[in-house]
Image (tube, rainbow, N blue to C red; front, side, top):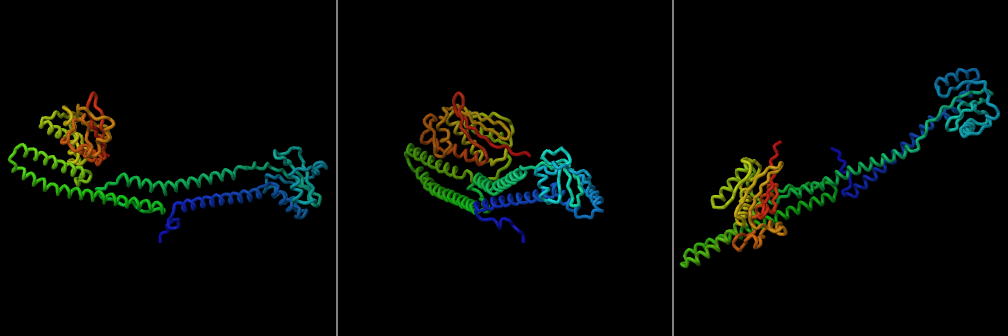
Amino acid sequence: MRWDIHSFMPNRISGQIAIVIVASLIVIHLVLTALFFLTRSGSQLDRPQDRLVTLIELIDASPAGSRARLVSEVATGFPSLEMELTDRVPDAHALSANTPYLDGLRRHLGPGHPIGSLAAKTLPDGVPDIIAIGLKDGTFVSARISATPPSRPFGPVIVTLLTFATSITLLGVWAARGLTDPLRGFARAAENFNPHGEIAPLPERGPFEIRAAARALNQMRERIKSLIDDRTRMLAAVSHDLRTPITRLRLRCEFIEDRTARAQMLDELSHMSAMVESVLSFLRDGQSRERASMIDLATSLQTICDQFADTGRDVRYDGPDHVVIHARAAELHRAITNLIDNAARYGHKVDVRLMQASPFVIIAVEDDGPGIADRDKDAMLEPFVRGDAARGMNDKSGFGLGLSIARAVIEAHGGTLALLDRVPSGLIARVTLPLPDVR
């Protein structure tokens, strides 16, 4: 059976954070405890006075005839002490001198071992350079005391700080992986959400709070998709039901003898039919089943401009002969046609410019009409919003869906649509589309 650490973790984020903090504190205490014992045991074994006490007791307990050989062996084994039997005896002043080091030796060896310094020189920490220690039979042993290595009082503090920093780093890494990764997953799921396509559910894993948020997001996306599907089906049914009476009314109008009245009735019915088709077109955008393919955008724009020119409109193309992009041809054709038709309706001359600015391609549809006020530009991209009198709108000139349909198609292709002012007058509908990745 495979062991998984996540099976032992609490379900909630607060519990997991508490576990990490407690584990960090335990690690810090273990490190400090180990450091304490290692430092303590090392200092007891390495201090010269402790070794010296042990060796003096060993020499004092050995027979007098073998002491010379034993001292020689000790000198060989501990060259830093330079121990030897000596005839030099410290004077009374040296034997009575009180220093922390000498007092410590006297306390460990007892009163039967006279101790004094044989040299006036002392080490930086006040320890005599050479001392003589008397044995119980009156013999003296001299020894040189090497300088003890300087203590490092900040060692434990540094280790504590490093351990604390390591624990905080591990906690940060855990927080980044355990909290920010699911949040980035939520952001990607929201950005890639397409209510008209297949919805891949967001994985419901991690702490309780993350699982609850993922479950709520999945349910919300399902509800949105269901609402949009219901709206589309309802409006499609309404439009279908409207087509039948419109068709019947067209047939009945043919029997009206008054030509003027018949023309007016047919014009109203055409207007109603165009309104129904525009609404359906707006609803269909973003949910087309057409597959994207590589198309020549420059050729498509030239074709659209030629079609408008054939109807007597002054529409001209300016740009390269070939620019290939990845798009859905029919949808993009409809979006660009809407933009050019909107420009030709309110201006006398329309220029369609195509430019490449890697990694994007830019289409600019420019007209010389009255333009749109800055305060109204954003609103004009919303559905069923029509321009003011400056654009020459009337009840039968449109339904306020052309720009909305174009924006929906362009955004479905990963692009943007912006309305800009043209100098000296007019409007620029600027379309930005991504170029295909050629790597």
